[in-house]
Length: 324
Image 1 (cartoon, rainbow, N blue to C red):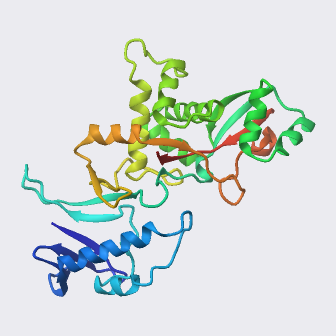
Image 2: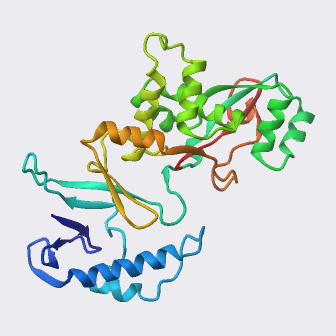
Image 3: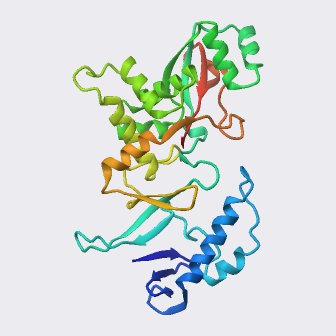
């Protein structure tokens, strides 16, 4: 029915599409209006400009953007108020005749594939290495170029990795809030991805079910890991972040809007719950973030004393979840 956008001055503007695009303030006072055809032409220009943007660049110039944004009485493509939902929309439900204001998360495939769960130092996972490495071997392994090379060396030299805990107490508590066994499940899922060079979530869940590290009754019900990983993906999609305390309340309480590579839109509403969860499970993969100390700071062999753990050798591994 309409889009609600926050302004920098604390006001809301309403964007209503009827015969024209009508822009009004929260009190219903008309700000401006434009023909639908004109708005469509503007969106086409934006799509073409974004599609031609340099892949991997966080910012690029669109010469016409300032004039277009002025016509829409905004200074930003995103909502100017700081909130988790990317867009707030009043929708009309033809079944209930209800017209709620809902927040939606937007994921765009026009450029590089978007992330579902972002990595940070808070998403580091701690693993213990057995047997313990002596100091000379530790230095030798840490001198390898990448964390991938270090994990490969450990595997090829018959060292085993055992999940200990999430590095962040907040992330640990968040996962336990979703499911008490989730830290262990995600730890095994991430480790399997590193060791087996697999990244599709569906493949990794199948491996979890086969290996059954939590000793669930998978012979009776094979859906334990499938269900619990879906819960993690869904909460990540709708507001959960590794570095924030999570109370289980969905910020994007309307669902997901997917912008396809050709600019078409697909909407997954929350009330299509099963379809939404299945989409997330089948459309995501484990991705490996930047390991620099200024970013996620992981992938080096550590002594227990360095991280206030028991004696032994440890390594932190990190992950993010990206659409495939």
